[in-house]
Each structure stands twice: as structure tokens, then as C-alpha cells.
Length: 206
Image (cartoon, rainbow, N blue to C red):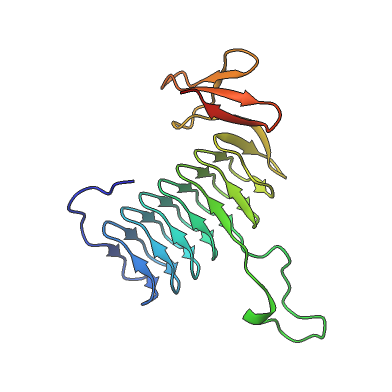
């Protein structure tokens, strides 16, 4: 994704906390009470709302929107043009414990973080929970309040607890219309797709 020419210097609100080792690109806006932790990176023209946590080592792409109160824990990888809704959570530990079997407090050497990967153009709805390790595909959409525990295919619309696919969406976010048993179309852009029953995925028709 090519950034706009002559981007302004990043804006970091006075009450935001950004680690000296974090990389914040031109055109980024980070609002009050947000934290960008060590070795995280935020791509150009990305908006980080209020009260957001971007954990250590997280990579956020360009032109993303990370809305108020979202929690993105490292080592999450977020592609360009991704929307993360208010209060959404991307976890990093699928066997969380505070202590070891011997009663000692766990530290960084006692667990290995795992990543949620969100690919180009995808959207994570308000209050959704994405449980690592999973991949959210390109242009996929996760409904508000969903709990995602499995990979989400490109362009899939998922909802519920646990999240299940309930449809397909185009790059605009609108649901694709069914033309026949295998063909779907975006009524806004005209983009057409073929559905594979074997893999339950869709591919654009060139």
C-alpha cells in the first residue's frame, strides 16, 4: 500500500505512552491513554484511538484503524488497511496460567506467545475476541462480539460464539450475492467469485 505523498510527522497525544524502541511511521495519530510497547511498529497513516494497547513486538500495517480500547498483544501481525473495532482483543496465549505447577509465578521464560495474524483489508468488529494462534484472511469480516478460535478464510463473514462462517463479503464489506450454486457477485463493484465446497473458500474470477 503506497502512502500518500508528503505525510506529516506522526501525532502522539500528550497522555499516550510510546516506547522509545517502538517505530511510528509518518502520518500516524495516537490518542490519549494508548500504549505502544517495546519494539512494536505502526505503519503510515494508521489511527490508534484512545485507551489502546499495542503490545511488545506487534506489527501494525499502514492505513489501519485501531479503535478505542482495543488490545493487540504481541506477536500479532496486522496487515495494511485493517479495521480493529472498539474493545476488540487479539490474544497471545492459548494456555494462560499465572503460576507454574510448583506454585512459582510464571515469567517470560515459562511460556511462548503465539500470534493472531490479520491480513490486508480485514475487519474485526467491536468487542470481538480473536484467540491465538489464528489467521484472519484478506478482506474477511469478524462480527461484533464474535469469539474466533479457528482460521477465517479470505472474504469470509464470521459471527457468534464460537465464530462460524455465515456468508461472504466483498472488499466494500457488503455481503456477496449468490448467482448460482458456485458463483457469487458484489453488486456494488461487480467483482465475481467462485466457491469451493471442498475447501469452503472463494476465489476471484479473473
